[in-house]
Image: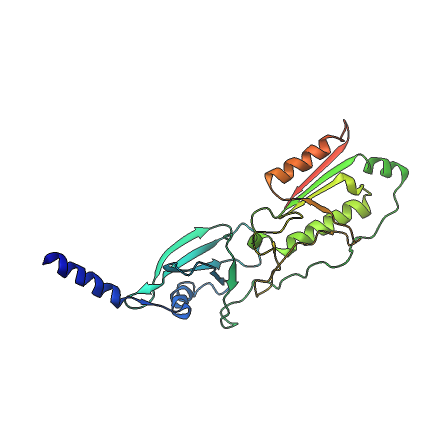
Length: 252
């Protein structure tokens, strides 16, 4: 008899729990961070059988990674009102696909306006002296950027790589074959629906990183920004570099 009563009580308890909506789940999250007007909130994509709503909160949008951010979990099934179950502090965004949550403009406010992706050459070619031309051919470089995940791979980082690449080629005359570029997923498709770069907009728009850094119609990115990609770049340079040559490495 005791077992039967216990079973009935358990069933009754489950019947009291209800599935809460996204709007109801977001309310305690928004309230918890009400003093952080600059924060941006994202809904993390999950499978339909998850028992929590998961939100990503960027506490310093507009700044480069790493910086303060967190994951917030809210129970999907509750007896009364929605409450925050868990807050996990992070320094980088998760790899999961995320959607920016639209709320009123006064509450969500980016720290600064998003930069535009460079779409044309910005460094003019320079005529080199014979001495500079000889030195340029003895200079090698690796440009490495965006190896963490697509959410952290901002377009402003690609802009920096494009400007640097154009500077090395156009201003200092370094041969393109001497410059080895490893950006994000390289020439392959990203795990995030083929898009590996965050466009820094208020809408969380993603795109694929352009391979042409100096806009001459030819791809310049060769490798993925991974240990293997970096190793391949170093091995390639190692076959050609000689004593007293110059080597330049930039990691973004």
